[in-house]
Image (tube, rainbow, N blue to C red; front, top):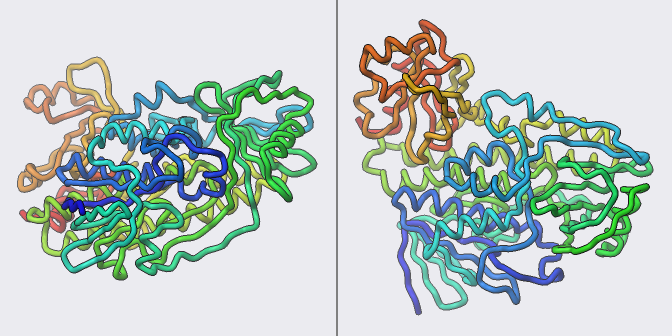
Length: 533
């Protein structure tokens, strides 16, 4: 029997390379087990946490990362996260940018919309990045290396006062101080903990097809919803490599042949030939959420993430992106609890962990609500579906997901200008004094530390926490000369968002959400609730 001890054990979902269509039928709801767990582990590992990811196999699959199928789009917020992780450039080079949604009916385009993307403020990536989930998994797996084990199906899990013990069918025992369960909608861990997973299951069975086509249809990098006979039952998602993904809603038996026939009817009068189909599967829409995301009623050592915590329709790219957000929210929390506990103020570790449940459960509830509306509207006229997309664009782009007004212990309600506690930190443009080129804030962020952005004079308020937080002074563009005279250019940046005479401090959490926006004194008080002085 092989025994291993780590700080954090991650029970992941299916991570595989090649499979048959039948082996993946009805398994779309487990698609978040891989990237959610792997990203959480990678972020924690970079912060000094020893980790081990246990990826369970799909029958007859080789023990490698996924190569085909699954989720297909990264929204703006996920791209911000992966830029900080350092893998976004690789994804962009392989992916396809898309920021337009179109409707096609009666043989022609009826409308095109992109304003919910182009209207985003202080955001660099104003588009979906169309890229297969397998590419994301492969890049994460390459970073994790020996911290990722394939073909390790978990057989049992036991929680004690001081840790977690995980046993696999291959006779491996893994001891961890904490455990992340990201093992999909049919999570063995969640079931073992007897955490209720409640919700609805609308009677909708979808087909999904990844295929190359030969067609005289006017190709464009747009998400196209096709309306036929007053219903919108086919959607075309552009993909990398010239691949086309189709979602098809059918009545009765769902087969690949019937799916292709439906696509041809919806694209008429244009010709469509399917030259090579890489993947075909079906998935049932399920809308469920765990009663708690943390074991022992929020006081335990096992944390649910991804589809193990919540599942919903795939519309709007919500699944993969919500799972990645769970991971970005968890990595720093695990590191602070496991490695930086001696630097935390009394009670801070518990508040940090509790805030994960408070914030991510509410987000999951809203994602389920948004996805439910979208998946139900797709049966009606395309204009109604697109109108609902517009109403819920903040969730589809990811930039409207926020944690204010939730009672989260990690957010102090406050607001100054464009900065509001609980919202995503704006990706402002910064210029180094004396330099001609500017950089976006997210491009200089290193994941793991709180950051304080100070406009004006901070009066030495942050000297106590200098070794624990990263602080940047941001000055009005007009103050470049004064910045040089004060000899502070190494710590200072110039930004258009700061106006002459303004004095404030913004505390930004490691997951790039604003924790506090107000005075320097208020920021110091917030930090004192987290760190020992």
